[in-house]
Length: 186
Image 1 (tube, rainbow, N blue to C red):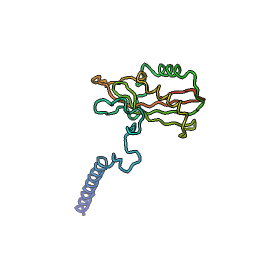
Image 2: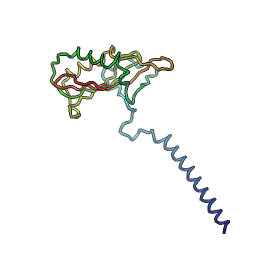
Image 3: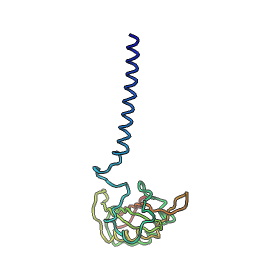
Image 4: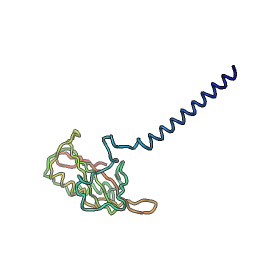
């Protein structure tokens, strides 16, 4: 009788070990073969991806090195601005002190800055103040695109370990009320 109990305990322990091992193998297979498979997913590219064929100003500059893009998840944000964001805002206010446009909404630019500080590869998203996609005045959008694409507004960012410059992803959103830029994000 004691012998049967010992065999049952050993059997349960061996079964638990086999099931645990099979679970680890299954997880490993999923993680390495399926977790990063984007074939049947709506977003097939990485966050920050900009389609080179559809991007505006995509033929003026080249991406440096292996064309790898840094900061794709959150953009370069404040580090990307030359000097600082206040300087950028002041430059914008000087350039657009008298606006001929009366639109209200958001103009969002997603773009890349290469290792030389040149901005290009722009994707533009226009929305009304309720955040619904809506075309705004093309003159206003073009003026903001021209201002934003000026390379004098963007820093050259470098790796800390070897001081090598790199390409990075950036986004900027202008809130416009009655033709005047009232807020710049980020």
